[in-house]
Length: 413
Image (tube, rainbow, N blue to C red):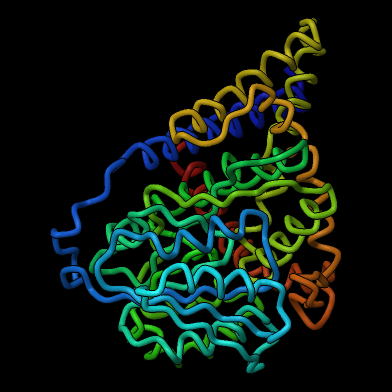
């Protein structure tokens, strides 16, 4: 067997094993504790039914905005207040919010309008007034497009442990309308959420800005809400703050839905590119392996192997693709997520975009978030700067490999 054939076989086996293992772990997580703990049961280090402040920053009108914002009023929880935060008095979402408040006169709710700019992050600037106005020691920051189930707060507290500094939830796409919304579902659900739950299962959880449950005292010890301005993305800053405090970010076992509605190709591309550039800027060593993710490269390896061994090319690649994306469909079915019949097509289209997203994320820093031009870094990420950040870790890996090789040679001599 030649070196290229051996390399293709090794690569294909390794990535397939990782793919199946990650799916199995995610399935276990999503099926584990399918019912939340009863509210009457005290959680570790959390008093029984603690009072909670929910801060929802708003900017413009999202698809299904009425449903997602109304869900804030319908929670089965005894003690919570709602703080809607809007930066501009001319924002189109304000009439909708005022109507919802009028429909729920007994709710403890405030509408806060104004913009205090303490960072380049418009969302953080918008959240600031809500955090300061919050009356309670437990605070949830939730994006406007999160659809809150009735047991929303219970789900978050159910994941809190003695060593927890933050509980978060990745978004799970639902109600897609059209081809590109299906692509976005494939990105959010069986790809991004799956990998987040894999690393979370090993205690390396990352915060996700869609929903974050904080104990106010923990963030105050780190410098307060303003400390989230240390990174252009508040969830990246939150992850580093929690880890620096010796605590962990945990994900809830049943992630929360985000209704998508209609999506265009440009919306999907630029949203994924923004997230990729933010991951690259904040967690470079975790970002680099993304070039090997997805089913396209292993299918190319299968094509090489099929050609080398005289097997039917189309049948071999098609069978492998069916197994690869069929396994992702098993995850979606087990978790109760949106699962279209044409999922393999959407999964393949997603994976064809991944290499282009990876290269584009390396080459640029600019992105637009809700009309605001932002940058992940002040200077462009050049190869020399990339290597300067990665080189120390590579040296550690190389030194360890040399030690193991010397030890092996010593035993064989």
